[in-house]
Amino acid sequence: MAPPRIGLALGSGSARGWAHIGVIESLTEAGIQPDIVCGASMGALVGAAHVAGRLPELRQWAGKATWRSIARLTDLRLGSGGLISGRQVMSFLKGLGIGEPIESYATHYAAVATDMATGREIWLQSGPIHEAVRASIAIPGVFSPARLGDRWLLDGGLSNPIPVSVCRALGADVIIAVNLNGELVGRRFTEPEPPVDTRPSRLSGEVVRRMLGQWPLPAALRRGMAEADAVPAPREASPGYLDVLATAINIMQDHITRARLAGEPPHVMLVPRLRSIGLMEFNRAEEAIAEGRACVEQALTTLRRYL
Image (cartoon, rainbow, N blue to C red; front, side):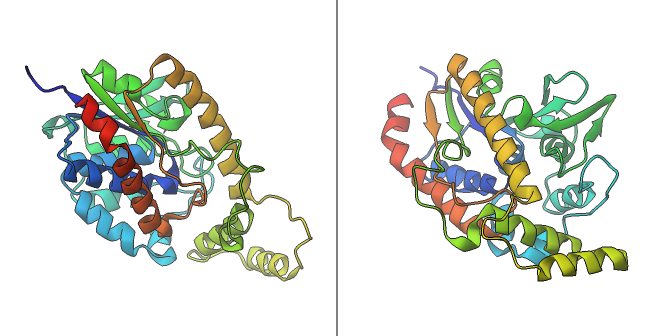
């Protein structure tokens, strides 16, 4: 009998997407090689690195990432439909060697994006792989929409956060799915609050300050930022911009994920424990990677039963 074709569905989750690196590393060490890799948002990015054979290089960069190195990728461009234009991200991927046509790779790959005009999910299976990734990571409010052909495309997590259906349609017999957002909604009042330094409301202001500090800004705007920092915070501060954005995306993707998986469940679902890692905390890759590895190790018995 021919071995089953394994599909790996890598879910969206922004900075939590570094956990996909740990998942893929542990699967490889266990002798489990996916034949089909489908990803949404950060799942598309990490999946592309794996398909292109550049996962070690991506892991090395992520493990050493600092606020400064992350800021270099955030080419601020207000008025383009988002805070970040995404050109530096594309250059970064090409610099890592992630830029060949999708159809040239041995592993079948698809990135999921969302058509801005119709709201339908789009499966990107051809053309330069870094362009497919750029479209799939176009988080509303953060990245500007990506133009491919005659379409404006947004983040794949808006329509199919965990692309199990794509793996199945492409011929996978056994599907392993990775849900990065499984612990984010509905746990706020049932678990202890995370340490102060990782609270999203405080983090979002720090991220924005670090991002904006890399570009020349009008003197009046800089004075306003300094005055805002000097004002003592109220006892119960209002949510920051990224806090609101992250929470809205988490709620939306949780609802979409539950609806999609109810009709198209995977054979094995991996859920790394990533609740404490915020939307833009890309400098916490080592923690996310470790959680990815841990969830695979816990699921190995189930995985081997299917394979």
